[in-house]
Length: 336
Image (cartoon, rainbow, N blue to C red; front, side, top):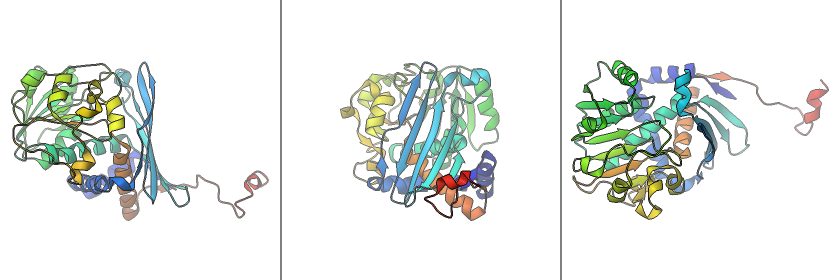
């Protein structure tokens, strides 16, 4: 069985180049969303606590089964720890044997941003040039880089209640081919923006901005409203926008759309990819991708990274499971 550490993931991305890696990932996600009916899918199993959540996220086709263990603890950063950490496993459907265990903290950030980029291809205006990033935590740079890779972004406005997070964001993106503009508040950041990403971590109901603050044709990518009782966008906005989600039964519980009903969801992302429903239909409609993260996205990046690790001969092979001459004689391991 192959084990991929964070060093292995870094080596894969460095070898390919970040932009090539992102391009492959968006393409892999699009391919997998296009074959949505081929997968066995379910909403993630979440165990909630007063200070956070721990989740299991399974998905499979006829060849591979994957699952991810992931947490969400917003107060972890106050103690020098990441608020999200994750580990993923990929197994053979034919035998049930695990083929790979991988670090998924970095991979989750990458797949979340890439899924947003895929949704934006269908929901944002092609000529979008201004991007607002609300919440400058661990996701912010990934979201920015993916959208700037897919759209002709010239200016990125950013705001966070934590000034140190804003400094971190600006430092990491220094030298990028777009202007960076720090803002004093949310209203300044979103004013006239073509695209808005909301990526806050506070586990509470919020209304970061209202419908009347948006320019016509704005695309909103909401990724911070991702568990019950945690929202970023107003009910009025969700009721009046074209809202796309990943998986209705999960999103209606965890996403910003939890404030509304399933009838207020326009489509699931796979329906846009498969051209069952249209994406953006004009330059004035407000569109929202209410993203909570779905297990199919983890399947996509785990299968992709497994192929790349084998191709590049990266990762370590461990004999984690017993190998027996007689597979019916498990007790024999204790006689030797």
